[in-house]
Amino acid sequence: MGKKQKSKGNAAIVNSLSIIFSISTIVIVLLANFEMFAFSSSYYQKQFASLEVYSDFEMRGISRQRVNLYSE
Image 1 (cartoon, rainbow, N blue to C red):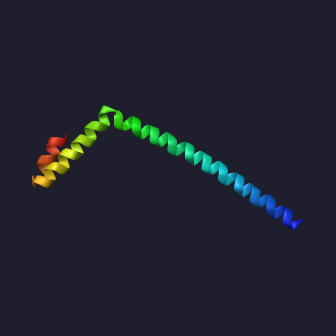
Image 2 (spheres, rainbow, N blue to C red):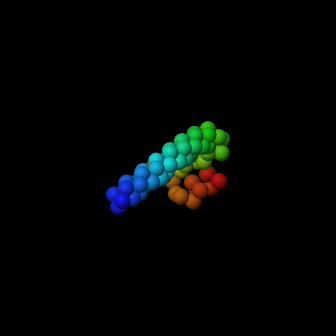
């Protein structure tokens, strides 16, 4: 009787783990699709362009204040 109870508990754990795994997989796929959509939008392209400009100025040794003026 005790053994049967234990196997039932294990089955419940396995079931809940498989449900969690499937949900997390769906969430990951949705997030990946959203990120692709976000990167394709112009807003994010502008943001990353300003970041690239910032790093370019940093490499050239131009002060941070001027870089902030350029990115805004």
